[in-house]
Length: 409
Image (cartoon, rainbow, N blue to C red; front, top):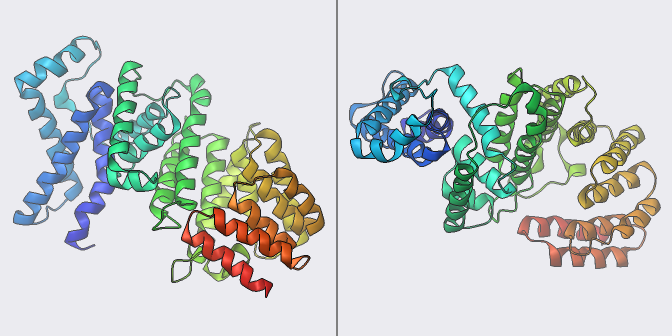
Protein backbone atom coordinates (compact mmCIF):
# COMPACT_ATOMS: atom_id res chain seq x y z
CA UNK A 1 0.00 0.00 0.00
CA UNK A 2 1.34 3.45 -0.95
CA UNK A 3 2.13 5.94 1.82
CA UNK A 4 -0.60 8.26 0.47
CA UNK A 5 -3.18 5.50 0.88
CA UNK A 6 -2.06 4.35 4.33
CA UNK A 7 -3.56 7.10 6.51
CA UNK A 8 -7.03 6.96 4.84
CA UNK A 9 -6.93 3.17 5.22
CA UNK A 10 -5.92 3.38 8.89
CA UNK A 11 -8.57 6.03 9.50
CA UNK A 12 -11.19 3.63 8.19
CA UNK A 13 -9.94 0.71 10.30
CA UNK A 14 -8.57 2.34 13.48
CA UNK A 15 -10.65 5.49 14.05
CA UNK A 16 -13.66 3.42 15.09
CA UNK A 17 -11.56 1.36 17.50
CA UNK A 18 -10.11 4.40 19.25
CA UNK A 19 -13.52 6.09 19.50
CA UNK A 20 -15.18 2.92 20.81
CA UNK A 21 -12.58 2.40 23.55
CA UNK A 22 -12.63 6.05 24.63
CA UNK A 23 -16.44 6.20 24.55
CA UNK A 24 -16.65 3.08 26.69
CA UNK A 25 -14.24 4.72 29.14
CA UNK A 26 -15.81 8.21 29.13
CA UNK A 27 -19.44 7.24 28.59
CA UNK A 28 -21.77 8.85 26.07
CA UNK A 29 -21.70 12.09 28.07
CA UNK A 30 -18.28 12.77 26.55
CA UNK A 31 -18.68 11.22 23.11
CA UNK A 32 -17.50 14.39 21.34
CA UNK A 33 -14.28 14.32 23.38
CA UNK A 34 -13.63 10.75 22.23
CA UNK A 35 -14.24 11.73 18.60
CA UNK A 36 -12.02 14.83 18.92
CA UNK A 37 -9.15 12.84 20.41
CA UNK A 38 -9.39 10.24 17.63
CA UNK A 39 -9.51 12.93 14.93
CA UNK A 40 -6.58 14.82 16.44
CA UNK A 41 -4.59 11.59 16.54
CA UNK A 42 -4.88 11.22 12.78
CA UNK A 43 -4.14 14.90 12.20
CA UNK A 44 -0.94 14.45 14.20
CA UNK A 45 -0.08 11.38 12.15
CA UNK A 46 -0.55 13.30 8.90
CA UNK A 47 1.77 16.07 10.07
CA UNK A 48 4.40 13.89 11.75
CA UNK A 49 4.65 11.12 9.17
CA UNK A 50 4.96 13.66 6.36
CA UNK A 51 8.08 15.07 8.00
CA UNK A 52 9.63 12.14 9.87
CA UNK A 53 8.44 9.28 7.68
CA UNK A 54 6.36 6.25 8.62
CA UNK A 55 6.94 4.62 12.01
CA UNK A 56 7.77 0.91 12.13
CA UNK A 57 4.32 0.08 13.49
CA UNK A 58 1.83 2.76 12.38
CA UNK A 59 -1.11 1.25 14.27
CA UNK A 60 0.78 1.05 17.57
CA UNK A 61 1.97 4.64 16.98
CA UNK A 62 -1.64 5.79 16.62
CA UNK A 63 -2.73 4.00 19.78
CA UNK A 64 0.13 5.49 21.78
CA UNK A 65 -0.63 9.01 20.57
CA UNK A 66 -4.34 8.53 21.31
CA UNK A 67 -3.51 7.41 24.87
CA UNK A 68 -1.26 10.43 25.40
CA UNK A 69 -3.81 12.84 24.00
CA UNK A 70 -6.44 11.40 26.33
CA UNK A 71 -4.14 11.90 29.33
CA UNK A 72 -3.15 15.41 28.25
CA UNK A 73 -6.73 16.38 27.65
CA UNK A 74 -7.72 15.44 31.19
CA UNK A 75 -4.81 17.35 32.65
CA UNK A 76 -6.24 20.62 31.38
CA UNK A 77 -7.77 21.71 34.63
CA UNK A 78 -10.69 23.74 33.33
CA UNK A 79 -11.96 20.94 31.10
CA UNK A 80 -11.34 18.39 33.83
CA UNK A 81 -13.25 20.41 36.44
CA UNK A 82 -16.22 21.24 34.22
CA UNK A 83 -16.76 18.03 32.27
CA UNK A 84 -14.81 15.10 33.59
CA UNK A 85 -14.58 15.41 37.39
CA UNK A 86 -18.36 15.31 38.01
CA UNK A 87 -18.68 12.19 35.88
CA UNK A 88 -15.81 10.51 37.73
CA UNK A 89 -17.20 11.42 41.15
CA UNK A 90 -20.53 9.87 40.20
CA UNK A 91 -18.98 6.64 38.92
CA UNK A 92 -17.68 4.43 41.72
CA UNK A 93 -16.01 2.04 39.33
CA UNK A 94 -14.46 4.62 37.00
CA UNK A 95 -10.93 3.75 35.93
CA UNK A 96 -8.22 6.43 35.78
CA UNK A 97 -7.72 7.72 32.28
CA UNK A 98 -4.05 6.81 32.48
CA UNK A 99 -5.17 3.22 32.05
CA UNK A 100 -6.92 3.58 28.71
CA UNK A 101 -6.81 0.04 27.36
CA UNK A 102 -6.22 -0.29 23.62
CA UNK A 103 -5.48 -3.99 23.72
CA UNK A 104 -7.05 -6.13 20.94
CA UNK A 105 -9.48 -7.76 23.38
CA UNK A 106 -10.71 -4.46 24.83
CA UNK A 107 -11.00 -2.93 21.37
CA UNK A 108 -13.20 -5.82 20.28
CA UNK A 109 -15.26 -5.73 23.49
CA UNK A 110 -15.69 -1.96 23.21
CA UNK A 111 -16.93 -2.17 19.63
CA UNK A 112 -19.45 -4.87 20.56
CA UNK A 113 -20.66 -2.79 23.51
CA UNK A 114 -20.98 0.28 21.27
CA UNK A 115 -22.94 -1.74 18.74
CA UNK A 116 -25.62 -2.55 21.31
CA UNK A 117 -25.57 0.97 22.75
CA UNK A 118 -26.11 2.86 19.47
CA UNK A 119 -28.82 0.38 18.46
CA UNK A 120 -30.83 1.15 21.58
CA UNK A 121 -34.58 1.14 20.78
CA UNK A 122 -34.85 4.69 22.18
CA UNK A 123 -33.21 5.95 18.98
CA UNK A 124 -34.93 6.21 15.58
CA UNK A 125 -33.79 3.70 12.99
CA UNK A 126 -32.01 6.25 10.78
CA UNK A 127 -30.13 7.58 13.81
CA UNK A 128 -29.03 4.06 14.73
CA UNK A 129 -27.59 3.49 11.26
CA UNK A 130 -26.02 6.96 11.19
CA UNK A 131 -24.22 6.36 14.48
CA UNK A 132 -23.11 2.92 13.33
CA UNK A 133 -21.60 4.47 10.22
CA UNK A 134 -19.95 7.29 12.15
CA UNK A 135 -18.67 5.54 15.28
CA UNK A 136 -18.28 1.91 14.28
CA UNK A 137 -17.47 2.23 10.59
CA UNK A 138 -15.42 5.42 10.60
CA UNK A 139 -17.52 7.13 7.91
CA UNK A 140 -17.28 10.88 7.47
CA UNK A 141 -20.34 13.12 7.66
CA UNK A 142 -20.30 13.62 3.89
CA UNK A 143 -20.20 9.86 3.28
CA UNK A 144 -23.17 9.34 5.62
CA UNK A 145 -25.05 12.12 3.86
CA UNK A 146 -24.43 10.37 0.53
CA UNK A 147 -25.68 7.06 1.92
CA UNK A 148 -28.93 8.72 3.07
CA UNK A 149 -29.30 10.97 0.01
CA UNK A 150 -29.14 13.89 2.39
CA UNK A 151 -26.79 16.79 3.18
CA UNK A 152 -24.12 17.31 5.83
CA UNK A 153 -26.20 19.78 7.83
CA UNK A 154 -29.11 17.37 8.16
CA UNK A 155 -26.83 14.48 9.13
CA UNK A 156 -24.99 16.61 11.70
CA UNK A 157 -28.30 17.57 13.30
CA UNK A 158 -29.52 13.97 13.27
CA UNK A 159 -26.37 12.68 14.93
CA UNK A 160 -26.42 15.52 17.47
CA UNK A 161 -30.00 14.67 18.45
CA UNK A 162 -29.10 10.98 18.66
CA UNK A 163 -26.16 11.68 20.98
CA UNK A 164 -28.34 13.92 23.14
CA UNK A 165 -30.89 11.11 23.39
CA UNK A 166 -28.19 8.67 24.46
CA UNK A 167 -27.17 11.10 27.22
CA UNK A 168 -30.74 11.76 28.34
CA UNK A 169 -31.54 8.06 28.53
CA UNK A 170 -28.21 7.45 30.33
CA UNK A 171 -27.56 4.48 28.09
CA UNK A 172 -24.54 2.54 29.25
CA UNK A 173 -21.90 1.25 26.86
CA UNK A 174 -21.76 -2.41 27.74
CA UNK A 175 -22.68 -5.79 26.35
CA UNK A 176 -26.08 -6.77 27.81
CA UNK A 177 -26.28 -9.60 30.30
CA UNK A 178 -26.56 -12.99 28.60
CA UNK A 179 -30.21 -13.27 29.60
CA UNK A 180 -30.95 -9.92 27.89
CA UNK A 181 -28.95 -10.42 24.72
CA UNK A 182 -31.77 -12.08 22.77
CA UNK A 183 -34.09 -9.13 23.51
CA UNK A 184 -31.47 -6.54 22.52
CA UNK A 185 -30.07 -8.43 19.56
CA UNK A 186 -32.89 -7.80 17.10
CA UNK A 187 -32.37 -4.01 16.72
CA UNK A 188 -28.64 -4.66 16.28
CA UNK A 189 -29.26 -7.21 13.52
CA UNK A 190 -31.90 -5.00 11.91
CA UNK A 191 -29.44 -2.10 11.76
CA UNK A 192 -26.73 -4.29 10.20
CA UNK A 193 -29.29 -5.67 7.73
CA UNK A 194 -30.41 -2.17 6.72
CA UNK A 195 -26.79 -1.03 6.41
CA UNK A 196 -26.09 -3.90 4.01
CA UNK A 197 -29.24 -3.18 2.02
CA UNK A 198 -28.31 0.49 1.74
CA UNK A 199 -25.16 -0.63 -0.04
CA UNK A 200 -26.68 -3.48 -2.04
CA UNK A 201 -29.70 -1.54 -3.31
CA UNK A 202 -28.03 1.86 -3.30
CA UNK A 203 -30.27 4.80 -4.11
CA UNK A 204 -27.25 7.03 -4.67
CA UNK A 205 -27.22 8.81 -8.02
CA UNK A 206 -23.55 7.99 -8.41
CA UNK A 207 -23.41 4.33 -7.37
CA UNK A 208 -25.72 1.36 -7.85
CA UNK A 209 -23.71 -0.83 -5.52
CA UNK A 210 -21.83 0.58 -2.53
CA UNK A 211 -19.55 -2.28 -1.56
CA UNK A 212 -17.98 -0.42 1.36
CA UNK A 213 -21.35 -0.28 3.13
CA UNK A 214 -21.95 -3.98 2.48
CA UNK A 215 -18.54 -5.01 3.73
CA UNK A 216 -18.87 -2.85 6.86
CA UNK A 217 -22.17 -4.61 7.62
CA UNK A 218 -20.47 -7.98 7.15
CA UNK A 219 -17.60 -6.92 9.44
CA UNK A 220 -20.01 -5.92 12.22
CA UNK A 221 -21.92 -9.18 11.88
CA UNK A 222 -18.68 -11.16 11.94
CA UNK A 223 -17.84 -9.54 15.27
CA UNK A 224 -21.10 -10.87 16.66
CA UNK A 225 -20.41 -14.36 15.32
CA UNK A 226 -16.94 -14.37 16.84
CA UNK A 227 -18.23 -13.50 20.32
CA UNK A 228 -19.55 -16.47 22.28
CA UNK A 229 -22.36 -14.49 23.92
CA UNK A 230 -23.72 -13.15 20.61
CA UNK A 231 -23.00 -16.13 18.34
CA UNK A 232 -26.68 -16.94 17.89
CA UNK A 233 -28.46 -18.79 15.03
CA UNK A 234 -30.05 -15.62 13.67
CA UNK A 235 -26.65 -13.88 13.62
CA UNK A 236 -25.18 -16.71 11.55
CA UNK A 237 -28.22 -16.58 9.27
CA UNK A 238 -27.72 -12.87 8.61
CA UNK A 239 -24.02 -13.31 7.88
CA UNK A 240 -24.88 -16.21 5.58
CA UNK A 241 -27.39 -14.05 3.71
CA UNK A 242 -24.83 -11.28 3.21
CA UNK A 243 -22.14 -13.72 2.05
CA UNK A 244 -24.47 -15.15 -0.60
CA UNK A 245 -25.39 -11.69 -1.87
CA UNK A 246 -21.79 -10.48 -1.82
CA UNK A 247 -20.72 -13.53 -3.84
CA UNK A 248 -22.41 -12.05 -6.91
CA UNK A 249 -21.01 -8.50 -6.66
CA UNK A 250 -18.58 -8.88 -9.56
CA UNK A 251 -21.28 -10.25 -11.85
CA UNK A 252 -23.89 -7.68 -10.91
CA UNK A 253 -22.43 -4.70 -12.79
CA UNK A 254 -20.87 -4.36 -16.24
CA UNK A 255 -17.78 -2.30 -17.11
CA UNK A 256 -19.95 0.80 -17.52
CA UNK A 257 -21.34 0.34 -14.01
CA UNK A 258 -24.77 -0.68 -15.27
CA UNK A 259 -26.92 -3.37 -13.62
CA UNK A 260 -26.70 -6.86 -15.07
CA UNK A 261 -29.96 -8.68 -14.45
CA UNK A 262 -29.78 -11.91 -12.46
CA UNK A 263 -30.67 -14.16 -15.38
CA UNK A 264 -27.98 -12.52 -17.55
CA UNK A 265 -25.10 -12.64 -15.05
CA UNK A 266 -21.85 -14.41 -15.90
CA UNK A 267 -21.89 -17.14 -13.26
CA UNK A 268 -18.14 -17.70 -13.64
CA UNK A 269 -17.73 -14.34 -11.87
CA UNK A 270 -19.59 -15.53 -8.79
CA UNK A 271 -17.28 -15.79 -5.78
CA UNK A 272 -17.26 -19.46 -4.81
CA UNK A 273 -15.36 -18.76 -1.58
CA UNK A 274 -18.12 -16.46 -0.35
CA UNK A 275 -20.75 -18.99 -1.43
CA UNK A 276 -18.97 -21.64 0.64
CA UNK A 277 -18.79 -19.29 3.62
CA UNK A 278 -22.47 -18.52 3.22
CA UNK A 279 -23.26 -22.24 3.29
CA UNK A 280 -21.08 -22.67 6.39
CA UNK A 281 -22.87 -19.94 8.33
CA UNK A 282 -26.26 -21.18 7.12
CA UNK A 283 -25.39 -24.61 8.49
CA UNK A 284 -24.46 -23.01 11.83
CA UNK A 285 -27.74 -21.11 11.81
CA UNK A 286 -29.68 -24.39 11.80
CA UNK A 287 -28.96 -25.02 15.51
CA UNK A 288 -31.59 -24.20 18.11
CA UNK A 289 -35.28 -23.48 17.64
CA UNK A 290 -35.10 -19.94 16.26
CA UNK A 291 -36.47 -19.35 12.76
CA UNK A 292 -35.93 -15.73 11.81
CA UNK A 293 -36.54 -13.83 8.61
CA UNK A 294 -32.76 -13.95 8.13
CA UNK A 295 -32.89 -17.76 7.98
CA UNK A 296 -35.54 -17.66 5.27
CA UNK A 297 -33.89 -14.89 3.25
CA UNK A 298 -30.58 -16.75 3.50
CA UNK A 299 -32.35 -19.85 2.16
CA UNK A 300 -33.62 -17.84 -0.80
CA UNK A 301 -30.16 -16.35 -1.37
CA UNK A 302 -28.62 -19.82 -1.22
CA UNK A 303 -30.83 -21.12 -4.01
CA UNK A 304 -30.04 -18.00 -6.04
CA UNK A 305 -26.38 -19.06 -5.99
CA UNK A 306 -27.30 -22.37 -7.63
CA UNK A 307 -26.49 -21.92 -11.29
CA UNK A 308 -28.89 -24.47 -12.78
CA UNK A 309 -32.30 -22.97 -13.59
CA UNK A 310 -34.33 -25.96 -12.39
CA UNK A 311 -37.91 -26.36 -11.23
CA UNK A 312 -36.59 -27.63 -7.87
CA UNK A 313 -34.67 -24.39 -7.38
CA UNK A 314 -37.70 -22.19 -7.88
CA UNK A 315 -40.04 -24.41 -5.89
CA UNK A 316 -37.67 -24.13 -2.94
CA UNK A 317 -37.42 -20.37 -3.34
CA UNK A 318 -41.22 -20.14 -3.52
CA UNK A 319 -41.61 -22.14 -0.30
CA UNK A 320 -39.11 -19.91 1.49
CA UNK A 321 -41.06 -16.84 0.38
CA UNK A 322 -44.31 -18.41 1.58
CA UNK A 323 -42.86 -18.93 5.06
CA UNK A 324 -41.19 -15.53 5.07
CA UNK A 325 -44.50 -13.78 4.40
CA UNK A 326 -46.09 -15.72 7.24
CA UNK A 327 -43.60 -14.54 9.86
CA UNK A 328 -42.96 -11.02 8.54
CA UNK A 329 -45.07 -9.73 5.67
CA UNK A 330 -43.65 -7.05 3.42
CA UNK A 331 -44.89 -5.83 0.01
CA UNK A 332 -41.40 -6.25 -1.48
CA UNK A 333 -41.19 -9.88 -0.36
CA UNK A 334 -44.69 -10.49 -1.72
CA UNK A 335 -43.65 -8.98 -5.04
CA UNK A 336 -40.49 -11.08 -5.23
CA UNK A 337 -42.56 -14.16 -4.44
CA UNK A 338 -44.61 -13.65 -7.60
CA UNK A 339 -41.46 -13.93 -9.72
CA UNK A 340 -40.62 -17.24 -8.04
CA UNK A 341 -44.23 -18.31 -8.60
CA UNK A 342 -43.89 -17.61 -12.33
CA UNK A 343 -40.74 -19.72 -12.52
CA UNK A 344 -42.09 -22.57 -10.38
CA UNK A 345 -45.67 -22.65 -11.75
CA UNK A 346 -46.71 -20.32 -14.55
CA UNK A 347 -46.85 -16.69 -15.62
CA UNK A 348 -50.63 -16.83 -15.47
CA UNK A 349 -50.59 -17.70 -11.76
CA UNK A 350 -48.01 -15.02 -11.10
CA UNK A 351 -49.97 -12.29 -12.92
CA UNK A 352 -53.06 -13.00 -10.81
CA UNK A 353 -51.06 -12.78 -7.58
CA UNK A 354 -49.03 -9.75 -8.65
CA UNK A 355 -52.05 -7.67 -9.67
CA UNK A 356 -53.62 -8.26 -6.27
CA UNK A 357 -50.75 -6.35 -4.66
CA UNK A 358 -51.58 -3.02 -6.33
CA UNK A 359 -48.19 -1.48 -5.56
CA UNK A 360 -48.88 1.35 -7.95
CA UNK A 361 -46.17 3.65 -6.55
CA UNK A 362 -43.43 1.04 -6.93
CA UNK A 363 -41.46 0.83 -10.18
CA UNK A 364 -40.46 -2.78 -9.39
CA UNK A 365 -44.16 -3.68 -9.42
CA UNK A 366 -44.65 -2.43 -12.97
CA UNK A 367 -41.31 -3.88 -14.06
CA UNK A 368 -42.37 -7.32 -12.86
CA UNK A 369 -45.75 -7.04 -14.58
CA UNK A 370 -43.95 -6.03 -17.76
CA UNK A 371 -41.81 -9.18 -17.50
CA UNK A 372 -44.80 -11.41 -16.80
CA UNK A 373 -46.76 -10.06 -19.78
CA UNK A 374 -43.76 -10.26 -22.13
CA UNK A 375 -44.53 -12.91 -24.73
CA UNK A 376 -48.16 -13.09 -23.66
CA UNK A 377 -49.37 -9.55 -24.32
CA UNK A 378 -46.52 -7.32 -25.45
CA UNK A 379 -48.73 -4.24 -25.62
CA UNK A 380 -49.56 -4.57 -21.93
CA UNK A 381 -45.94 -5.39 -21.20
CA UNK A 382 -44.79 -2.18 -22.88
CA UNK A 383 -47.37 -0.14 -21.00
CA UNK A 384 -46.15 -1.54 -17.67
CA UNK A 385 -42.50 -0.95 -18.55
CA UNK A 386 -43.28 2.64 -19.52
CA UNK A 387 -44.98 3.23 -16.19
CA UNK A 388 -42.00 1.66 -14.42
CA UNK A 389 -39.60 4.10 -16.12
CA UNK A 390 -41.78 7.00 -14.99
CA UNK A 391 -41.53 5.85 -11.35
CA UNK A 392 -37.87 4.75 -11.35
CA UNK A 393 -35.65 7.03 -9.28
CA UNK A 394 -32.22 6.20 -10.63
CA UNK A 395 -30.79 6.20 -14.13
CA UNK A 396 -29.50 2.67 -13.59
CA UNK A 397 -33.02 1.37 -12.94
CA UNK A 398 -34.34 3.18 -16.01
CA UNK A 399 -31.61 1.66 -18.18
CA UNK A 400 -32.40 -1.83 -16.90
CA UNK A 401 -36.09 -1.36 -17.74
CA UNK A 402 -35.25 -0.02 -21.21
CA UNK A 403 -33.27 -3.20 -21.89
CA UNK A 404 -36.34 -5.25 -21.06
CA UNK A 405 -38.44 -3.09 -23.38
CA UNK A 406 -35.93 -3.61 -26.22
CA UNK A 407 -36.60 -7.34 -26.05
CA UNK A 408 -40.27 -6.77 -26.87
CA UNK A 409 -39.35 -5.79 -30.41
